[in-house]
Image 1 (tube, helix red, strand yellow):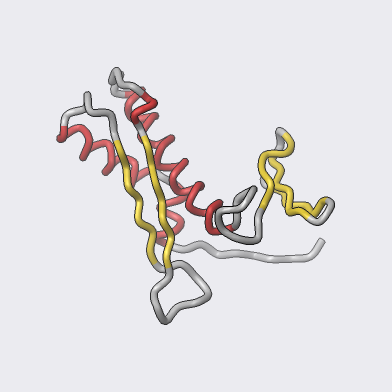
Image 2 (cartoon, helix red, strand yellow):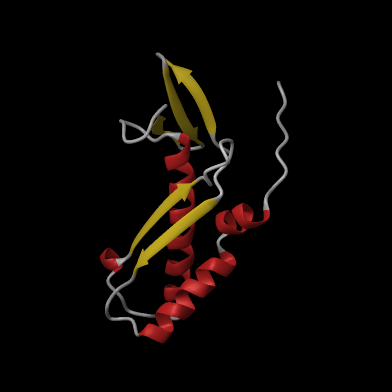
Length: 128
């Protein structure tokens, strides 16, 4: 579970281990705004999914060569939700092209965040 608290005028985001990040109200500021957090969640999920497959397949690679960039955008006539997510992946040069495609397909298939975005989810909001 993740908790957001307002502390000294800042949105502070916690998980079970404690303080993790400061929330921001705008892009490219100290802390992450909701759009950036959503992009980060998708990018992290793709990264973890690929790393698990690489480990399972016992593939030797340089992890520092993996880079995932996610950009969320809205269609021109839409203001209240993101309509598109572009995920750009840089993989280690040591991997052959066929395995790179297999890795990307596997990540798309198992990434829970990506699957949730693709298929939607029910949200229940309540006061406690």
